[in-house]
Image (cartoon, rainbow, N blue to C red; front, side, top):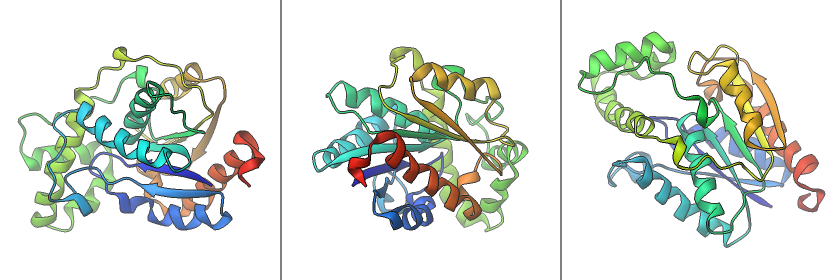
Length: 243
């Protein structure tokens, strides 16, 4: 059994992975462990991360505990993909290597990020306007009213600042495990060149295109295919000893 630690997008919570957990675990090959970032959901009473190093330290500590009990893998979407890469680098320093990594909704870390959202010193309304201009699914937050916006926007702002602080050049480490790159062709926050650059980060890389926008993992129609990809990765590319 492989323990798959799942890391969500900016402003997200662990519950985005619940439907995937149920579907993926049907075959009995993988246990999905959605990670809750500090300052939201089940960890609402803990502080938001001050910088990306705090996030990496928090996640790595959890993953190391999981690794003490068995094999691990990582899955990160958008911000989660950046954190998954950095957590991998931290784990390698401690001689821990994931069995595979799923990077979704993200350019390779050396390809940079979309810079159309200015989240410093702007009002909640302006920040929402900018985010909606990039991706209409942000309306899913705004339509629930002021109280929900007041809850989520500080979290989103804090998470996006983690990306703003991110310095890829500090690591630039190649990954010694298979990669699955999942993306949507309608995602305005990534580029074809950025996705292709994942080829430079590992010897074994496979690409899978989904329908939807940047938040395609929120579309339950994509759950069966993602589950198939992850279980097939365990069976075909990692080894039949886990079957």
